[in-house]
Length: 152
Image 1 (spheres, rainbow, N blue to C red):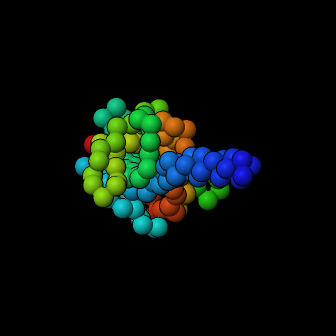
Image 2 (image 1 turned 45 degrees about the horizontal axis):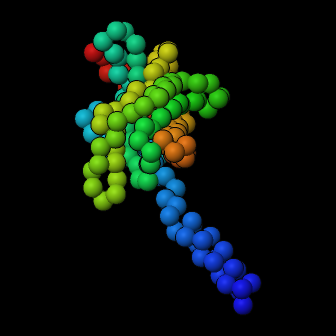
């Protein structure tokens, strides 16, 4: 009887630990200058010329189950030949609750483009990865077509 009680207690403790685990984080890659806009495969986000002469693509994100406070983001896009066409790293971003269990970026991040010449019309693999404050990771990617260059 004592052995059965010990086994039941061990099982109850194991199940209690599983019940408290948060669901895995999920993110959705998007675009948008003033708010999140879904980005479909084949979407054509423009390349913006910045005020200091650099170029970038605005990237937005929404997510669920991102825990532990600070969220780190990395974004990159590569061409069909594997060449890196843009990238950005953000060690801590601000998320705002938008309801329904979703949070989104308070403002878009930028994927910095070192050389925009020849990029409009090029198919790119745009990838976003997130790591939450608890060290849990999520990622999303889209095959996009680089849009036109928008001068400042």
